[in-house]
Length: 275
Image (cartoon, rainbow, N blue to C red; front, side, top):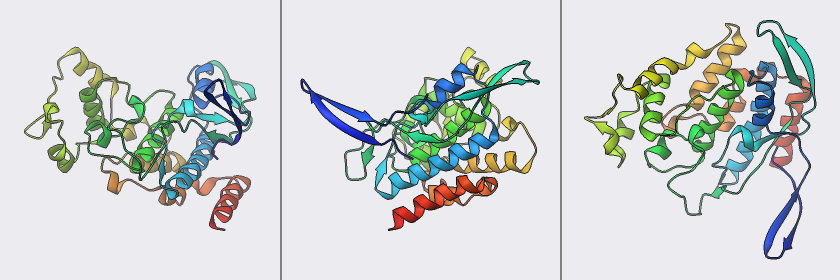
């Protein structure tokens, strides 16, 4: 599920890489679709593929570190158009939800130097913000944020400030773990173990208005919606050691409703990797 390098060449000192030809990114497609949510069936299939791609990386001691919808491309982004009765607008449905993971420019092996800051802001986990070190669970957090964005059409943590980001995490996911708070060198964000934050400021009112408990964003009561949000809650676990692994994620009930041909592809990949 990772992009395939076809060839490379040197052009006047610049290394150029030729990849397989792919379609639009999942971000570009959603943007051109007025940021309407992806159908749950597409989210399930894309999540399944991403879990396989990341599991492959993690088993090879590699962390992507820059997961975001812009770095996930459709193999073919051709679409059908239908009318969305509830939204009163036309909606694009991609014909094939097969994807590829791209952009390994920041990918880091376990033995390589780990920079302090990784991941694009909206997909950055708490351990990175608090400078507590990071490894493969960093990717899992980013994936949870991405799947939420596919489901709702908007980013989970719409901010560019560390303190505000941490406040949003607490409002959506619950209090930050005490151990993480007391271990971080970023004590300027805290007083007596609590975030320093003025809820009556303009930023405070913005967060109060726009950030709610994770489960409140669930748009349906069917088992598959509940299963997705259970998976999201386990991906968005603040403690990296307790965050769900990709192997565990692939066994989650959310993927039990996959079409046989979609599951068969994943099973074939597992067989090939085990050889």
